[in-house]
Image 1 (tube, helix red, strand yellow):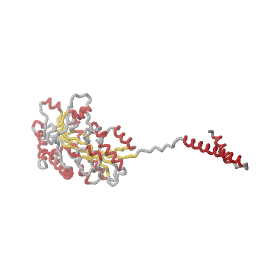
Image 2: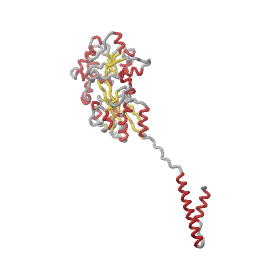
Image 3: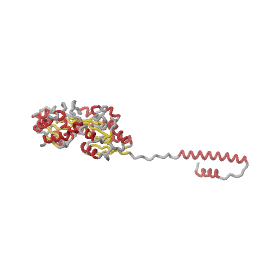
Length: 380
């Protein structure tokens, strides 16, 4: 009904009643009742036809993930979490693991982030001693092997693991007719003189892991003697993995066919090769206690104002979608044992049967003393 008709009806209803006979009055009341009912019906129709009010769109909540510079995950995977919870994940890349952890410790009264990823077993005790993480018993831990759960109170939860090992250039050894080494002891034999490059444990994470490998294998009373023999066999020490691998390693036109790297370097070589490869050009020395297993953890920083979302982020990082994206981005193995591995890892990602290990507390207590003693022996 048009607006003018509505106005006429309303005006009609509001006209003063004239003096009439009872029959006319009854007829008038009946007519008014019908008109009021019609007016009420029309108003209801107009209200029902009006467009519903739309709620204002809400901006996504922000959550900060503090981590080391080597953190990498596919954008679409992270976007799935953001869409699922209407949240924006801000990555705070903070240097290598040690530097990032130092920042987190120094800022614990006013935390820089909500969640921290990247503490490994060589820094685990230090992180726990400084009480910067809140415990969280994620339901996803049921899919994580007990051997990877080094913190029984769940302040830090395992996300991935990998092995630091010696890698060798397969073609170099084939051309020279020399068998690649299979144990740490082989490296001090004359045929391997001037063939090994390692990283300084004071400046490099894989360098520290290789030092820990020798301590676990030869003991605190024997590792310095071993390093003295390595030094006598002309071991080369450089500051970083990048320099060791891409400058000194014979695979990249260096002179050393043995380099401290990772057991997952061979699949990385295949993936990133400019030319298609039928086989990995490098392999790892996987003998008894010749590698050191690194485990990386995630935890909720004390003082977060996003506790519920922090829990959701950790659950997501431990679930299959995130876990199966880890190998080809960070070249380590997923902690979730239900996760499928990419074919490249199935084919070339070997794992040592018996990696070396040391307790996190022992590492924390002795790390600096071990490094100083190594420096006096090898870099004097």
